[in-house]
Image (cartoon, rainbow, N blue to C red):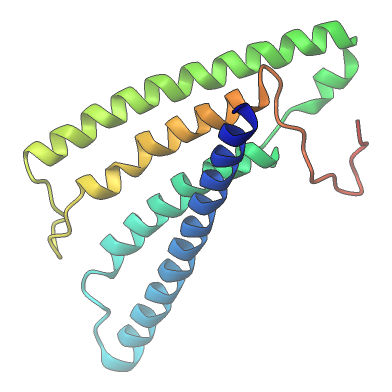
Length: 169
C-alpha cells in the first residue's frame, strides 16, 4: 500500500513537472511571438504580459514538487558535511519540519486568497483571464510538496545531481 502511494506521489510530481515544462515552453513561445509582432507589426500581442506572468506562475509552482522529489533544490551542504552524522540527522529533521510548516502555512493562505479571488470573480486587467484557476496551482503545489516530503520521511531527498566540483556523500 505504501509503495503504491509513493508511486502515485512520484508520478503526480512528474506529471506536474511536465505540465510546468509545457507552461515554460508556451511562455517562451508567447514572448517570442509578441516580440516579433512588436517589431514587425508595430504592436505586441495585447495580453502577452498577463498570460506570460500566469504561465511563469504555472511553471514555477508545477515544477517545485518534482525538484523537491529529485533533491535538485538549493541546499547548503557545507555545514551538514562538517558535523557528525547524529547532528546531520537532526539538521535534516529541522529542515524537513521547516519545509512542511512553510508548505502548510503557504497552502492555507494561498487557498484563502484563491477562494477570495473566486468569490469576486477576479480577472486580469487587459484580457479578462480568470485568476482563481491559476491561483489554485499554489496550494496544490504546496500540498504535493508535503506529500513528496512524507514520501522521503524526515530526511531530505538525496540529490541525484552532483557536479564535478562537489564531493559526493
